[in-house]
Length: 266
Image 1 (cartoon, rainbow, N blue to C red):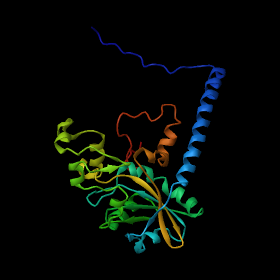
Image 2: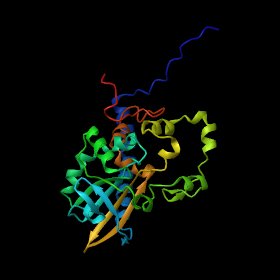
Image 3: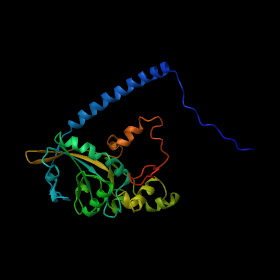
């Protein structure tokens, strides 16, 4: 039997009047989502605060710094936990895509009593070199050798992976089985692809995790007020906010994004 080309489904086409009716119906759902989002924001701000008495030290462009120093004289601090472990040769491409929008936002936050800072476990020299490559200017601190990433649930050990002791995004993950990974398509897949882009394997790559944590500084005391992880970071990923409004949406079949200097010039 001769092969034949099957035409792709055509998206529904309507008159302007029909489109407007459908759009107004969708608008009601969008407004409800906005109201719900406002309510969630209020509930975030009403969470109880946890006092931080532990001393954390970071390496920064200005030298050794405390957590209080990261506030840079402001009363609020937002930390993005960027996946860049000591064994990485480059930062996570997904975190990098998100971080492309930080510089534009940081200046506005700074003028609203909020400091945006990025923290990773890689040594400062690695972070500085990658920051220059990417052309970023936002503050980026190294927590190398400290417990900050462990304490805020964005760093795990091989033992935790193996024994099923990883608790990420407020739930316990299944035990990490290296032999299971090896059986699955030779270790191929989206996570393996991204891991390779950081110069690591999947277990090493996933011992670092992304997240965002918020802190307040009042009367010399630091408080942890909020943290979010995984899909909770979607709202901070500007690329997806635009794609969700594009005709074909996210339209993903795999890992299509790259660091901004790795796309073909064409």
